[in-house]
Image (cartoon, rainbow, N blue to C red; front, side):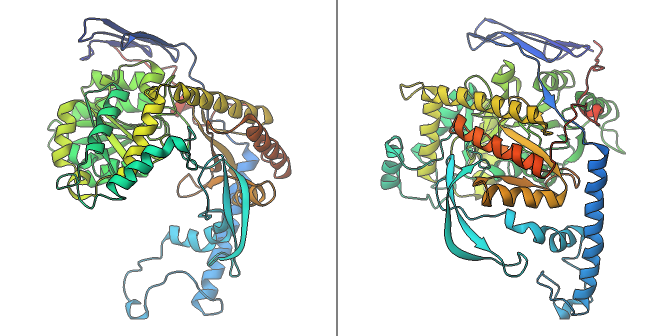
Length: 553
């Protein structure tokens, strides 16, 4: 089948020959996971390394003990619920009012059961109050519980200089005030803290327009629009792009904001296996061949939803293959670059730069300012007609308050730093330092024998813990004994048996900090027996093994 975009796909190899508007020849080639580009934006760029991603299976005995732990916890949970129902044990959870006892239960479901009987036992590992800037070191307020984590009280003690391995402070731009932030102070004095209006009314400032122009220039696209909340950038804009009669093809591990936006749109949603272009192509082919259910009419639009870097897996989207498929089947592509913009690519411009692809190949570029830029909010970027359409139809633009002026200035400052418009190379140095820190941290963890997920270039590093008891012990020991702040994640954010610690590497981390963390992890790995790695291939090869990927011309 001919590729509408002018390229061909065969045996997993992407060959794309496109005449650019400036007359220069643009060529991309992919072979065995290698992507090369002869020309991008007038500058040569080559991605000449294998895409290395790890999704190692856990040993059988680990999974057996993990499920046994959940099974025992479930049995005791039902026992405790029985005691609560009879008033033998006090119930601190939310319950229906007595006058509504004949109603269908509002709170009683499995997730609530899980919260009452398991999450509460280890709740002290989440929502820890921080009382400093989220730099490479931060301060944590100590708290204790007298009722098994249903409530907490502060002791008045501050745990000082905790190594921060949990914040999305990829480039180290979320830190204490210094003279480089003077422009933010000036904007605060001139504009105040808030706008008190929507973009459609009296909430569009010159700072917003300056920021949008800068974002478009940074991404090398025609236009961009910024929003005050990153989550709402997805959930409120996807419904403006697709609706009833449209089809959304969503990666099974997409972020909740993408899932919510897809559901709110009213479009039909089908999920494909994570990063698997074979699974995606099957859905695309069926969509084109069979059309809508019952009527068999053609879909109005087909929109593919993916992320640049997946925040729970640390994997990077297989963008060249997905672009080839979207061209072949004439679908639209929407990429959420919340965790990749500023953190991936030679100059931090995200996954398109990482693979050496033209950003115009992606129909909708979305990202947030909450990670690499040390701020808040998000953006949608792409063609000017797309952005102009969203300015009118986006729920976030029509109903949500505009971005705070000091926040906009912080993003402008960060972008200028990364782009070198401040007259220094500090931004580029931060991007390069982040890449070095990421590779070093991942390599050392693998050498120690831990199972870690994801791509070697992703700054999000999931370390698999599996057992719920070890999740609690790991996080408590790291903070209380080692003064290292970590984020642990479990159900429902991950599959039930794949609880993990998620580390976020920062350019602000020194080698000494990383070595301190690695030394503590090595000790914890031995203490809790967390070094499960046997360097075996994933138990889910159909998700990641694409050696049989084949599309006919």
